[in-house]
Image (spheres, rainbow, N blue to C red):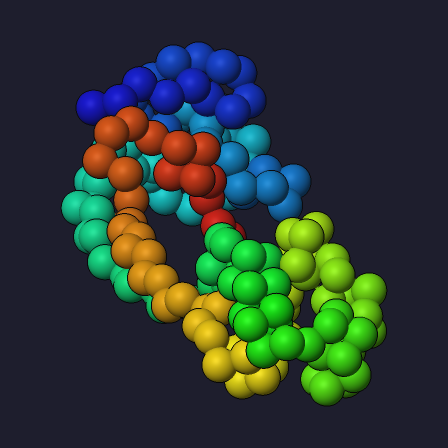
Length: 152
């Protein structure tokens, strides 16, 4: 059995009652229970922890390749286009193409797809990330939530 303190007098005991005292539900000793209406005994059993379940989740997502700047520049030059001509061809600003080629601007996925189509290169890679998702309560110790009482 667990020893619990009375909410009113602080006395330690293993037999406490739930009592409604001035519209508040308290855990009180037998002597203090006379100050209110007794609802019933307090359960002093330790709640059993549930076994944690692990769910493996795989996420697929797309990322722009790391060397996108070199790939874009080499392919544009191989096609014999200036930055200005290439920008006009794909309806983007020349400054955007310049920033892409020097690597200060990473293209969004939509822009990368547009560049892939115009240049005929691969700029987007598919990646998978595996994550373990834990469900249930922890096996060790208690949390504050284990002791909170919800009024029904």
